[in-house]
Length: 287
Image (cartoon, rainbow, N blue to C red; front, side, top):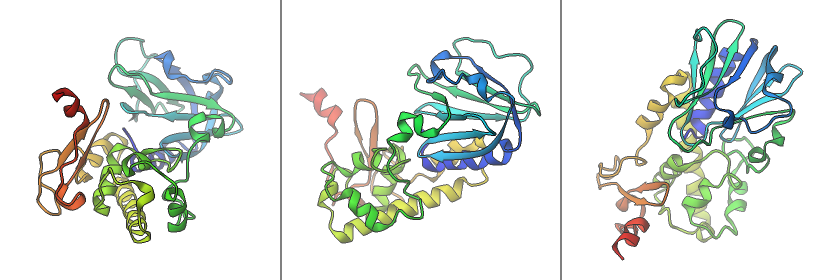
């Protein structure tokens, strides 16, 4: 799933390539991708893109005097930029293509989604706050006013484990499964540690890990073409998705905890005092 750093990089890429250009066609291929119908998708046609914004993991294309085109790429969605789109309208079918946006220059982008769980979403709204997911977002962790005191206030009465708290978009916007693993590894904290149990010193450590991990990832992604952002993300991850590999800090073997629809990775030496965390899925299978 694209998270804050990749969506921020896409925002910068689209700012450079979209702003100042007119959308001449917005063509849905999978109707399920459209989550709003008034105004219609065609309301963005004939309008110039004047700005591109990021709200958590949402991308927001603002048009001149018109609606906002907002998209959330979900787990398996992606944006593919094309300097020259194919001639003719896209054909509906069983492929990954969900929606195409064409500019007056002949360039544009495709939104695609792999797999069978179709969660890619497009909204056309007068105000981004009309999108329920945006309206519920917590603070952006890279905002200038998101200081350590703000972070501590969020965690003060948070009874969940750190892994779940960091991923909750209503608590902090933009962090997902991959970067929550990376942040906790950088902070040397167990993903199962309760958020409310952190000491002031631990809260400071986690805050610094949150900011530095995301800032470094944004800097790595800056200037990278849209088509290469996925591989750039993967190459920069230290523990997430690296089960069985050596920890780059201590050399211990990275372990995994599996859930019904996701998994987390961690280093026992760096994060749990050498203890192996219970794999919930395997525990059920062995009963």
